[in-house]
Length: 65
Image 1 (cartoon, helix red, strand yellow):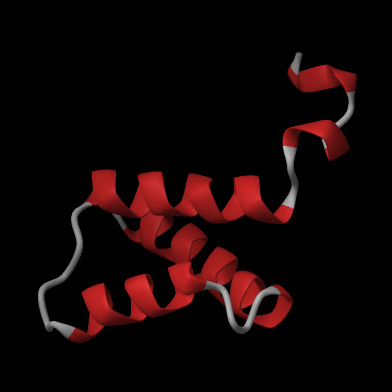
Image 2 (cartoon, helix red, strand yellow; image 1 turned 180 degrees about the vertical axis):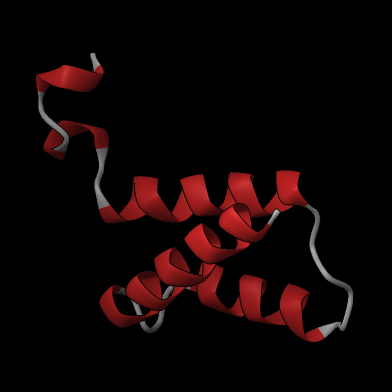
C-alpha cells in the first residue's frame, strides 16, 4: 500500500499546485483530515481522477486510444 500512497501523495501535491481552487482539493482535504486512513482502492481512484484532470484525454496523444 505504500506505493499507492506515495503515488497519491505526489499526484496530490502536483494537483494542488496546478489547481489550487479546484473543489476536489477540498473534498480530498476533508476526507484525509477525518483521521481515517483511506484504503488502497480509494487512493487509486482519486489518483486517477487527479491525473485525468491534469492531463485530459485530448492532451494525452494517440497512445491511450
